[in-house]
Amino acid sequence: MVASVFGVLALQGSFAAHARILDGLGLSTLEVRTVEQLGSVDALVIPGGESTTMSMLLDRSGLIGPLTRRLCDGLPVLGTCAGLILLSTKILDGRSDQHALGLIDLDVRRNGYGTQVDSFETDIEIDGLDEPFHAVFIRAPVVETAGSGVEVLAKVDGNPVLCRQGPVMVAAFHPELSGDDRIHRLFVRNAAVGSSQPAICTRAVPPREI
Ligand code: GLN
Image (cartoon, rainbow, N blue to C red; front, side, top):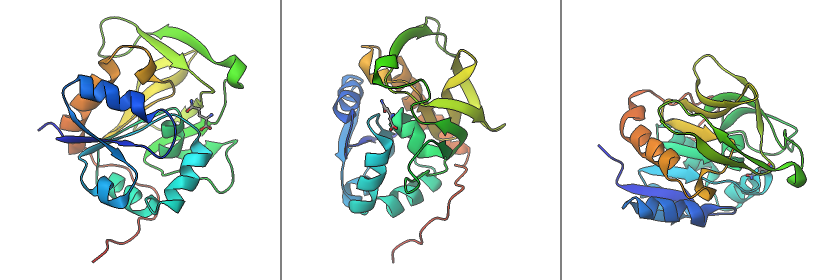
């Protein structure tokens, strides 16, 4: 079954470009800013932006608990750049109060490629795609370690840049900025089939509201 409503977390960052690509695929999309909106999506994109700010806004909006719970229940998700950082199990060079949601077994270093001026673009080979993908890296995180349960779909200089673990897909780059919808298509496919594997869910999950 294809997820019917694709949400894009719209607290901060590059959410509009993701929504445009999903719209272009003919999918029903919803910008998510509230717990109620989160409740009506069947899959979610967590965009790039600034992971420390997004983490703080997740607290302020009250989304942090419900989001963690839904992800642990297997909500299919695509996290890009800051989204990758938020979904990882361990954040290096992060702020001490920023959330690592613990949904994909990665040790990730924030700004591991350097600062804004070290942003770069490169063509990468991706498992499952015939032609290279032009990937845009902006103050990107470096995945230093991927656990054995993580499927690495692409690497740059030996470091994973596109990974999957059950319903969770992450990219260290910005797939919404290349005018190429193939990563989003992979995500849509994973949303349909990946949920047969449970999410790893390594953090305490808040109880369900009655
Ligand atoms: N460096 C940013 C962070 O720490 C991520 C950059 C991005 O999402 N383009 O969140």
